[in-house]
Length: 145
Image (cartoon, rainbow, N blue to C red; front, side, top):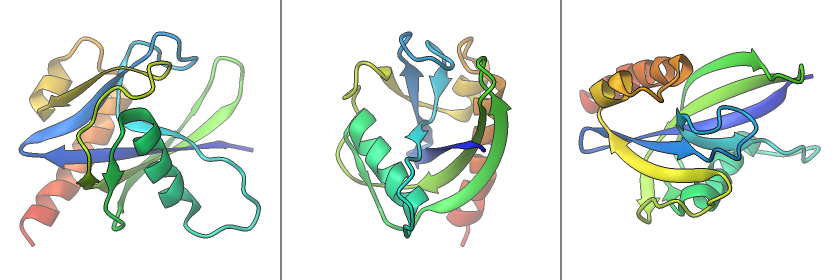
């Protein structure tokens, strides 16, 4: 059984919203990441992934996003304790608020970085770079519609 995780790829004025994960985090502590978190079991539910994404964005960086989120990609990985994670990335736009490290136990810092800055950053793991690469493709399609 997978643990489900959702992340938001948010683009504004040529830059992506990126967090530095708290060093207290069990997985990838101190590394750069998109904002997101674990999906909680609610039994029968509707729009669970989208609601989880919105909750995590508000809890971690204090923003709300517009309702129309767009699927970007999914990946899976295994945590050191053997649990398997399925990670889903969604492209979304800020509706209200300015991001800040609201949850200090989860977010060390908030950055707006260009794709090139992310790719050059020593704390950017390969999975973040791959997510940004896919989100960039989607963003380009959306910009030229």
